Length: 148
Length: 296
Image 1 (cartoon, chains in turn brown, yellow):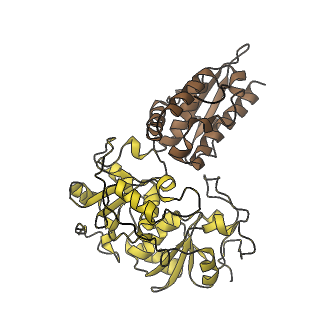
Image 2: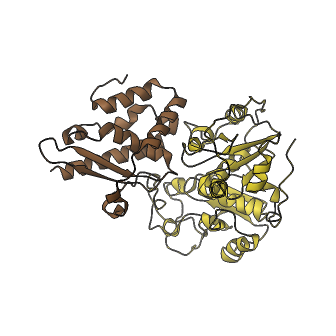
Image 3: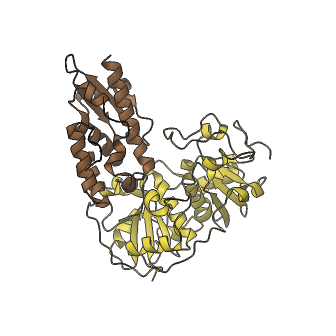
């Protein structure tokens, strides 16, 4: 169980699953999220130029968010990451499962250090986790800009 | 007992052909006793998405680096890693990985610091194996623990520290980073922003030969004649030279170390693993900016 419960419910559940698992099982879980990352919708496939490159990731990763109309301003997240970069895909898969479909305010309320709560530092190394922190930061910035 | 080398004619051109194996040879020898296959990638999960049957994973962050000091594991740590992987001192180890064997070469260099006698690279790496549609599995082997001895790491011949590089100024040096990093326009490798330095440029006198020039389009090493054109004619190295190679943290330059040492037969090549993340942050060491090597 995580010490503070200030995450959206789905994200909190993911954190609980990860922290309850052994280091080895955390890698397996991450691989599941990598496998389950939704494919990029057709309308983005030829429009990667319109997506934001995540410089913190070592592989070419692009993401974009769409924010719906009032009152909820529902957030949808789209990420493109190569199959040869399963760790990065896993990070994206966790963020997608934890954030997609939430109201903008809930996404913006996610603490910037949320990726550090998954207990992945020892499984993938702290350096690699920076990619996920970078992804979350860019998602929140886009949500802020697009819901203003 | 070490396994006999791959006799494939494409390898005999190199100075030490016994340090490479072809994909076909590996496919034919997967069940040969005394051989262990190791995958070493940049991405820590790539192995888990599928790997050569029987291969074990060794990760550069988690297995080869000391978790506290900026150094490699010590003799105890390496022996424990080898025992877990089922590797004995006389095991033939074949390493392969992603990105032209970039991290595989790094792992091979670390094995060499411990003097592991027989360690080879799979020519073409993971990409060549996959391109030939050879078998892959997600099944993780459970090796029988070996009795690998605790061997002291010997940095003296293969590794250069900052003071060694200062003493080496004026002798041949290869900077294997991208041209932008070499000239000082970039403080990090393109696409890899996180390991920066406070100063940009290169060590005076170093020639710039980006590491991946040694690989052909299919990920295999270039022919010896092409490699000689790149490193002898192009970078001005002469057989017998005492050479230091460096990059950003010492991984890309271990690929070049492999090429110079095992493919071209240079006997005195050291990898400066402190590389630009040390030199570019160190106080009052000489730095040259621009495209020319510069005077010492």
